[in-house]
Image 1 (cartoon, one colour):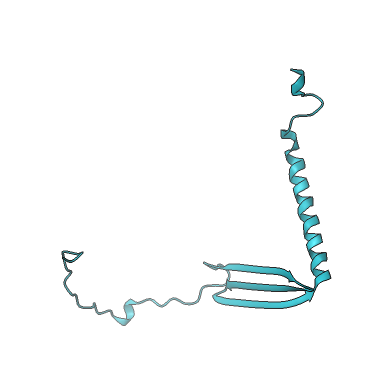
Image 2: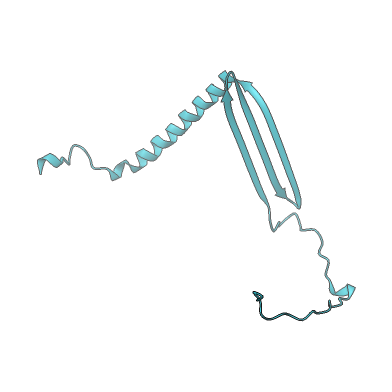
Length: 115
């Protein structure tokens, strides 16, 4: 038994006049309907060399553009870059923790052993 008990009858294609289809021009550059950017960068180290891979893709003004880059650099440059990134991250986390410190009880005023 068929999964679909009712069959649809075959239909002829409808004829369309040439003037009935509206051809749209290119999208104006002043107000794009859709645009996006995508960026990906990977940095890894193996042995004495560090490898950098980068990919950028964007769709703007009706054009799709893609760029790919791969390269190698010295391990010391990689370690310096990672050290700077860690210091930046820790600095940002210190600011977040400082802004949330008001939620913590003050150690001089509240002591649970003195209840």
